Length: 165
Image (cartoon, rainbow, N blue to C red):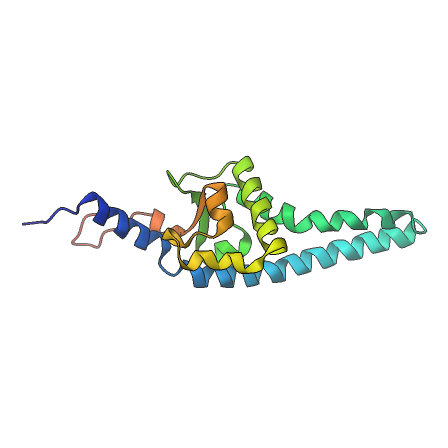
């Protein structure tokens, strides 16, 4: 005789499957993205500096645009079909809507990115809220209505030779 889960028990099991190990993976993904952002920003800085020298200083007026590179990096990757930055993708994470686990659109990805950088700029320890929330959501996740989950939890496990999928 099989025992059916009550709705609360099913929701807890789903939350556990979606968010098991997410915090450590988010931190590792953040480190990977930090390195990648540093490389991209340095390469763009070199290009702008070279352009500035070649134009006898006129091209140096483009340098402030480099401050938007991190925002664009997160926004473009999160609003793509991958719905994850390269660091998050390497760590098996994806960003989805909290209510239906659908891909975020470009507005939601922009709001997430804006609140993420505001959290980093204003008060970094606010990221610790993720230790105490359901699905380990940080403040920028909650405000944007998105959640970081393990991408593997979205796929149905394949069956073995004696167990149908």
